[in-house]
Length: 306
Length: 274
Ligand SMILES: Nc1ncnc2c1ncn2[C@@H]1O[C@H](COP(=O)(O)OP(=O)(O)OP(=O)(O)O)[C@@H](O)[C@H]1O
Ligand SMILES: [Mg+2]
Image (cartoon, rainbow over all chains, first blue to last red; front, side, top):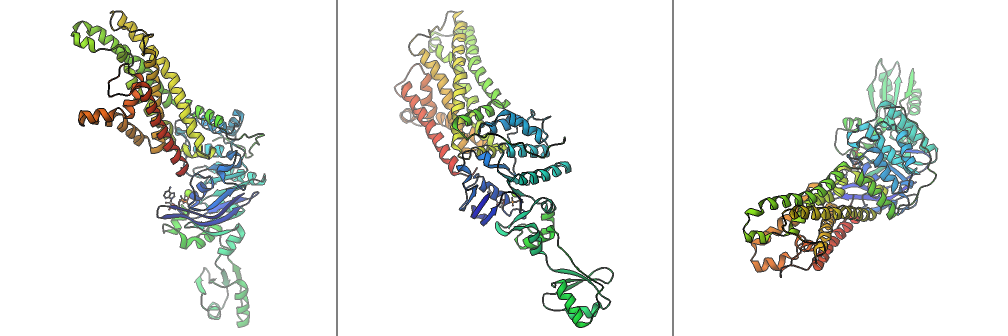
């Protein structure tokens, strides 16, 4: 369980995180979404006490992270930036971290096998590919059998098989009752993995909700209508905040009205309808709609899709 | 990559973080980097090799030296010649022990495992001091006996280990290098950058002292003795001028400098973001 209250972090003039309050509950996968530079990685560093908040507070399982007697047993983290000495082998890296908590060597070997690094465990980590480095980071995160797992863009650099594995791993961890907090740029990934979402833009909270609710909230009302009397229908529906886009084969996309409203208006005007289909926004679109104003670096489409 | 399991095995028991465990962890880190082993090896080699080299050169040139030149030779200068060179290797490694964690990002993993942070600094300082001293003591004694053995073949510059100050100078040489390592580690923790750390250390130990010679002699004599390098080297100096500290005072002052630098590093470590 992670609880942030009014969490704020300034780097000089720059406010990276701005009054964030949210709760990450155990037993589900919580996705952490936001455009580039919105403060996701900073928030995660604040949770781990690597950076100190300017104001506000964040606790893990009821305590500041640094006040836990066995921190690695409380939280396992994969950070965005690589956190491994390039000159040390994966085995010795894990062993050194395990020893701070008296975790046995057996466990180190177990995790190396779990993430599929047994063939390269004695090689210097500096020679690892991006995906191998990511796997080592995940092994590091799971070393202490943590009740809370924090992963910053874990699928970065993983191959399809690795992505599939992470997806199952996260769900498995949540099913065991652990708290799973994972940031990602891939909305499609989140829609497959996450149950809840914390969405931020420019360091501020935009949404703290379920995936369905988020899509619902962010969906602009769009309904696809087909009618033999399209022109009359337009006139009947026209109003402030309502717009029309011509779709293929005489269909009309109505923006700003629900299917019920359109059906009722058509009936009142005596206009026949051949099709009336509400369009559900994807998580991707929902995210873009909600964060459009909050995107730091312009170019929403490229920025988010990247 | 090979197939991997999706379930994480449970861990029956997780201990709390203790200073002793952090010490063991730092030992694993220390011994598992090739660069540390190299630096230590080179440091020890230089400590032994330079005295042997100087003993040979001095023996070979003895017949050509004037009486004044002969009088200016000292067996302890030869025996401890390597200390001056070894200190550089030990200092560079001292900086690297901590700056290497910052440059690679390892520090984030370290401080996530030990979020109270200070146990890591204490462990690094303690471990590095212990390792340096344990390696330097045999190195200076080997250097002493080897150089004496070479000089003995020409029956020149003989000095006994039992003569007053000789054993103290040898141990003092090892202690000096150890303290230099601790000082450099502290600098590395403050600067958090390898190049910057080595530059800062070199400035304090190798650049400022010769600059003092530009000052009027009376000023130079008054000030220089209190510089860390000058104070520290009294630990292994056999003779003492009026304007140098005693071995004990010099050694204590050097310890005080180290305490100050490590203290400042500790203060900054808990205050700064990683
Ligand atoms: N150590 C730092 N010093 C100064 N500014 C920083 C620091 N860390 C982050 N920032 C700034 O804070 C803002 C938030 O950065 P952060 O890395 O948390 O964003 P993010 O959501 O993780 O972005 P991305 O999706 O690109 O990973 C950015 O504008 C960044 O430049
Ligand atoms: Mg980030």
